[in-house]
Structure formats: structure tokens, C-alpha cells
Image (cartoon, rainbow, N blue to C red):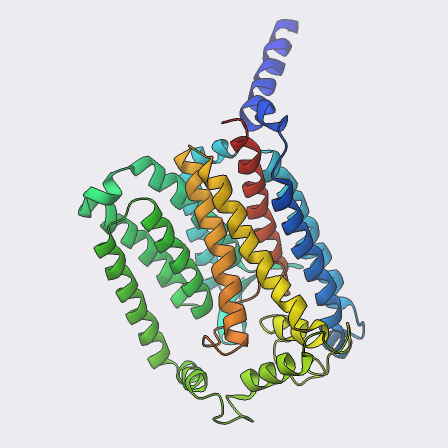
Length: 390
């Protein structure tokens, strides 16, 4: 019996050693990258506490309802995931490549189960289980990156040389995920996921001609979605001509312009936004960058943009010293996710891109989104720790 217990304890110890690379844990992570993530997360919570006060009080009688909801539904779970993934040996994740894809499809599919899926706005994009609600598409962004990184790293040169074993299966995988998102429908999430997947496909060795074909097909699909939904077509017209219908479909973008323009260089002061008083739609979600610009001014808004640029810079720096293909693809996927989503959100607020409801990573309200981005941040920190010994 004693020998059996010893063997059982040895098996547990070996499992722990497989999951956690103790040699790697002795190395320090990229401190600057950790600092950037910390600043964005804390700054996001501070700005949410200001941007959400009016809506919180109006809908719940508590000026900080949405702030505290973000803390316990996003920040605390995200902090646990960030710490876990920063300590976990990321190579262990590669073993569950197909499980991540299965989980992604499952999460997107359960939205359509009666009684589970919830319609918010124009999309069925939320799942409610008792008192717990979450947005599966935000989790799927990370799951898709984990799956594609493992799948591409295993296929190697097939991505470049073999049309039938490279482009076709990738197209089928992306098509399945896209179909489930189109059925919601959620154009913003579709654009983000497709962009991440195509960038990772190219980084894995996909041919340029195949890449152009995928982009063309994607643009055609987006065009079809716009044509089939009058409100999307109206948003596109407003993007081309913001002055049209300022009290109707153009109201959102014009109020965003007003908020950003009124902030000037140094802003009106923290908590002093006028647009959050029921003037600017989605003030704590998609439009929170406009509130940042209004309250803290152009200099702080520019600093937010620079923070995302610096994350890309640090990610590429880690990429250069990483020889593991799986790690390289993880870096490319996660960095592409953060920078594309951030720049699209900001670009939409300043009129450079059409409004599609894409949130600002780390800052916009949404517990699932914050927890997912923090988990992805933990993976980047983990890779930066391991890259120092190679």
C-alpha cells in the first residue's frame, strides 16, 4: 500500500512538471510587456468607472454597478487566467490543439439552443446559464488562435506547397466558424476572427495568391452581409458621408466626433464628459475611446494608441528570439488580435473605418472580453519568459 502511494505521488509530481516548466519559471518575463498590460488593464477600469456612471445609475440606481460587474466578471477571472497562463508551460497547450477547435465550435453552437442563447441588439451573441452570462465569441478568439497555432505548426510546408492539404482545409475550418458567426449575426466579430486567421495563415507559409483569394472572398461575404441588412448599408453610407442624417443613422459617429473634438489637447477633466449623459451611444463599450479623448484629451488618447503599438513592438522582439514555430504563431495571432481590434475601434471612432461594434481591448466594458484578453496576455508573458533561455 505504501509503495502504491509513493508511485501515485510520483505520477502527480511528473504531471505537475509536465504542465509547469520549472526551469523556465526561474527566468524573468519581459518586464516592459508586463508593465504595458498592467497599465492598459488598470487604465481601462479607471475609465470605465467614469464612462459608465450615468448608465449605471439610470439602469441600476448605483453609479458604479457596471464598474464592479467588470471587476468580478472580467478582471478577477482574467487575473487568475493571466497568472495561470504566465506560469503554465505553453508547449503543454499544443497537445490540445483539436480540443480547442472543438470547444470553439461548441461555444458558437450553443448560442442557438433555445433558453441558452440571448439576443442583445441585433445579434444572438450571449449565453446565459442561471446567474452567469458570457459572450462565446470573445472566448473563441483565443481558442481559434490556440488551434491555428498548433495546426499550422504541425502541417509545416504543406501550407505553402499543397493546395488541397493547405488552403482547402483551412478554408473549410474558417468557413465553419464564419458561418456560425454569420448566423448570429455579428459582423464585427467575423471581421476580427477572419483577419486574425488570415494573418496567421500567411505567417505559417500560405501562398500570396491564396491569401488574395481569401481576402477577396471575405470582402465579398462582408458585402453580402451589408447588402442583406439595411442598417449595415446605412452605416456604410454614413461612413462615406458622415454629415448625412446627423439625428438618425449618423447620430453615433457625429456624437463621437463631438466628444473627441471637445477634448482638445488636455481634455475636460476626468469624470467631466458631457457626452456620457445619454448623448453618445455605447458610451462604455465601443465608444469609450471617445470618452477618453473628451475627458483626458489628445495627449492621453495618443498614449493609449502608443501602448498598443508598443505591445506589437515587444511581441515582435520576442518573436525574433523564439525558435519554436508554435510559439511564433501564438505571438503573431495574439498580437494581431490586440492591434487590429484596437485600431479598428479607434479608426471607427475617428471616422476612418465604418462602425461595426468592435470593442477596444482591455478598456471597453465586457467581462468575457477582458478575461479573454488577459488570458492571452498571460500566454505572451509566458513565451517571453521562455525565450530568454533559448
